[in-house]
Length: 398
Image (cartoon, rainbow, N blue to C red; front, side, top):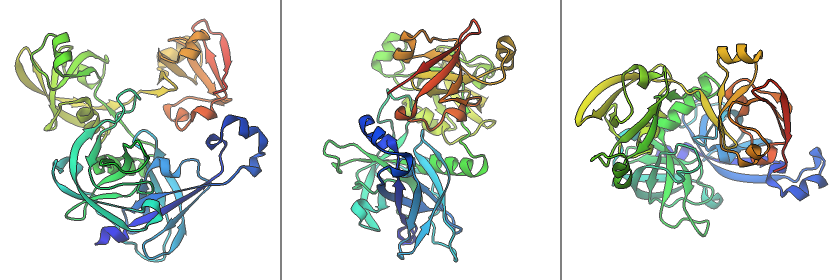
């Protein structure tokens, strides 16, 4: 059982005001913040010490300590993390080759298949629980703007299991255990894992590029069900109904049109939005995918080139990197363009679509990666440029 020896205990020592109620923060100097220790699990995925865990296990860290199954401890370095997929990559240096788990193909898993969850719940090292895959492509919160596509299992997972391994009966890694749904805070029947194909792609991106490369199909719309099918006057109740396309991106250039229904991508059947977003999360910009779509009752096939995602959601604002034309129009080289304002508080302060974010907390922003990692309690001020070319600074106290 190599997978047991490849799962490690992760201890995150942090001291951050973001973990304190706001009225306590003023009682501490920066070097006097109370220490907070969090624990979780991780999975060794290479013999030279690369480890995959959850982003929420290692966030706000001052020091990360790894304990292997043979009770040896190591200091870990954070290679990178991605809050959207909740995946982080760590590295430890050992004097010998370490036991590791091979990646399996999560797309090939089937509902009803037996799986094992391996982790350290309640600091009980090397705990193994068994169950079956209960569902795939689960999105736990369709309103949070994050495209989740979890593997759902009934293998028991509790606090401390986060970042641990979900393996199949061949001992292959098919998921990273990440979440449970619970009223009590403990396991009540279902747990959720990031599919291994997503975790592997994020792992490779963080090592090679330093951030996650996401491919954009360039379609907007909704997954069909009976209610939505009736609204769009179609008999299909499964698939992704296209309402609009982003001009100049892959789907538009390939000839897809509004009212087309995407039925599958690379042979993956699309019954709900998480099927589509989950599969695309395993692909990179520049790759091509085969799309089967339905138009006027007939199914057709087309190859679509994925493009780099050019937008992000930042505190309920959809923002994009500036185009060369916008830089010339505004006479600036830095900033992020607000394409869709959904932040009610900022909107009430007069900030709207067409404004440009120049600085966050006094730091200039140019790329989407510049706004990653901010928590609500971290946000102090934003400097905007309005469409008339005037700067406006908003002081925020969340």
